[in-house]
Image 1 (cartoon, helix red, strand yellow):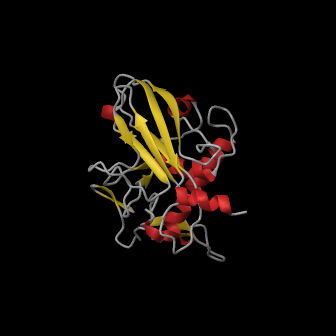
Image 2 (cartoon, rainbow, N blue to C red; image 1 turned 90 degrees about the vertical axis):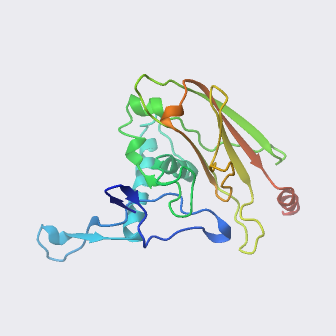
Image 3 (cartoon, one colour; image 1 turned 180 degrees about the vertical axis):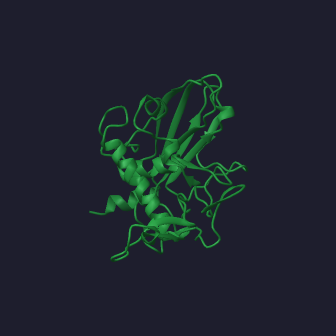
Length: 254
């Protein structure tokens, strides 16, 4: 994408979703227009000859990859609550999605995904500001031992300081089973995210204005606008379902 006087927009040449089997893509967007980068000039002098301006995937991809590397390093170095962590790819992905600002819609769409990557909005140098505003969980088991549907819940407390305007973001990412190209189902397992405010307001992951949800993806995000964030205890509910036909199939496979 690129920036105009009215804000960031998707570049006209940028590819759009959806992906194979109707899976919602992209996940996020990164700058990809008029990006200044280094280039190799054999025997060149130290001036602007060593720089180039490029557009497209070749620019947006390394920005996203570099941001992911920073997230991995942030946790590995113990910047989060002074506890070194080797995070999963799902946590890294959910973190990048959490840090992405919506462009035209809060819910994901095939033109912009969850929005424009903005990593600096979520993490800094690991100081107390980060620790007070971040809460992560990784590698959680949310299916029961017998493989049936289950429900998990967690609580967290929010304190809204006077004059502070920060939105609340909750993101869930998971890896789905690999299905064949001719499968009648886009996803094998459906995991749903629900956030309940202290006053009982219910926010569902990827909820559209018409109260339907985007279900064809393995990421769910809830954004509570800063004007609607409440002080008190919030609830996070995660629901998982394994289809009966998939369960019966797994029982028959050695």
